[in-house]
Length: 337
Image: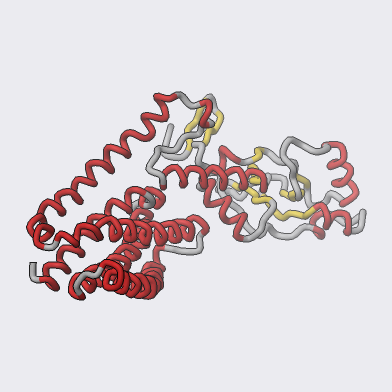
């Protein structure tokens, strides 16, 4: 019977690729608590070094339940006749085969673990996740996030070995979606044609406002996505994240707005009303963009989606529309258009 994690195949449990069970080193060598250190070391010498390096030995009872673990360094320093039951330490942390492999890898990175025991519902040791395994997972997830942030479907095949049609399929749906969403910005501009006709100078600042908003939104989204991936930010931290990004936005927006105001007055020789319109719009755009940049990834995580989909081109498109709305509404109020 199959569920979203595992299924049975010829009496053998097969785990989904994103589960710990598919990643772990199965059936590691274990020792009884009454085995002496000398006996364990002799057995380890017989085994030699396997395909995946193991840094600890594990102690289980006669039913396979995990009792403790001991590093090789601890074995070397212990008395040879000492039983393993007196040398071992309780495991710092364990995971289940059905757990998400990225979460396991992040825990190993967070607590600086070389190995992570995998136990079943009865606390029986069924496998190990090694540091090499965790590193591979984190690299895969980082690559996947980068592809999603660039609006591409993730691919597990090396680039030069991927067919052109496959690359096309991974990109075209996102490009179509972004193109269609960009029509909103065109509709906004069309709706304010009269205002632009009355103040043609406003048109020259549209690219600058949209680019600045997109850049600010991307900065915030990448920061939040990284924090979510590393476990530094949780959904419950949304208010603190918004407060911090809001403060940063006011500082950045204030500096950018002041520079823009002076540039328009001194270099473009436009009226103070036009300069104030652009500068104020820039401050509000930076504020809204940074808040969107931090809230959209959190909303994606809340909805069970990968937060990386809320970065890059997608968030830029959303911020562009917001920047235009702010710009034209501000111009309408300050310039009486």
